[in-house]
Amino acid sequence: MTSEDIKNMRELDEAAEKAGGFTSPVSPDDIHYDYRGISRYCKEKGIEPVDMTIRELNMFIIE
Image 1 (cartoon, rainbow, N blue to C red):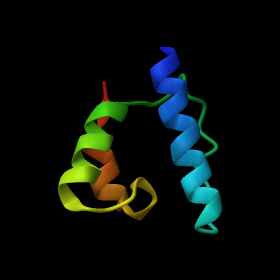
Image 2 (tube, rainbow, N blue to C red; image 1 turned 30 degrees about the vertical axis):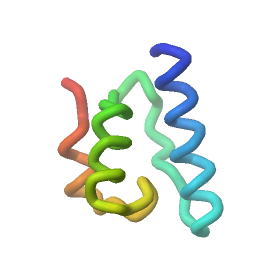
Image 3 (tube, rainbow, N blue to C red; image 1 turned 90 degrees about the vertical axis):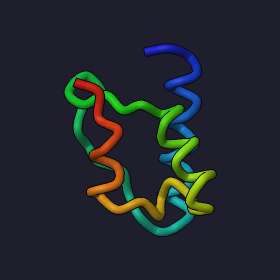
C-alpha cells in the first residue's frame, strides 16, 4: 500500500464519518481498491466517495 493509497483511504474514512456512516471493518489486506479510479469516477459523476453505492464501490476492487 502506497502513501497515496493511505491518504485516499483516510479521506474516504473521514467523509464517511462526517456523513454519519462508517467504513467496513474488513482488514485492508483482504480487499484492495483502486482509489485513483474511485476519485476519477466520483469527479465524473459529481458525487462524494461516501455517496457511492456498494455496487459502484465493488467496481473498483482490485483482485
